[in-house]
Length: 150
Image 1 (cartoon, rainbow, N blue to C red):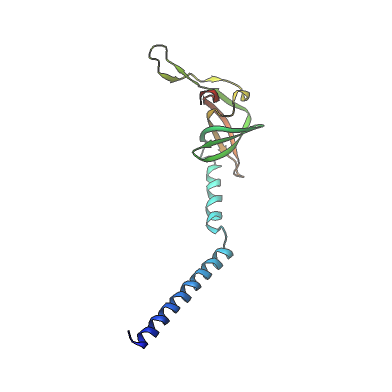
Image 2: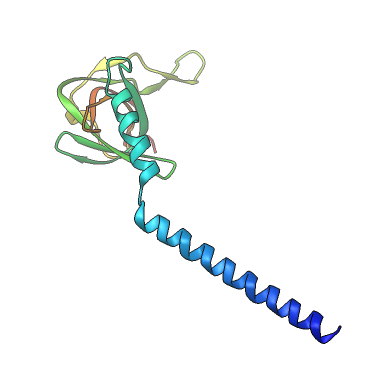
């Protein structure tokens, strides 16, 4: 390889490194000047739709991780959510029971129970609405498996 080719190759490598470094610097500068732009643009419209009269309710399913006053923290597959359950919310238990004829587990007939019947470890669903602030307000709870069935 001739001296001129070596010089040209070294020049191209140095120019490539400078262009790469400039691109990294511009990317960091842009991210610093515009944090969360995409997030802010998508979150508020989503909350507006979910808290509107169009979306009547949503449902969360998981195991009760924590109960703090009227707030229930659910966990499922590594995700957690805390939902405030309204005073006077409908709470039902539909624990699985053995069918005397087949011996299979079948979901029981839902029966009304109280908030105090919900225990850490229970598998439950909470039907909730999202308010304009993005808070979750539960108005119906179904207990499907008790913590003793783990």
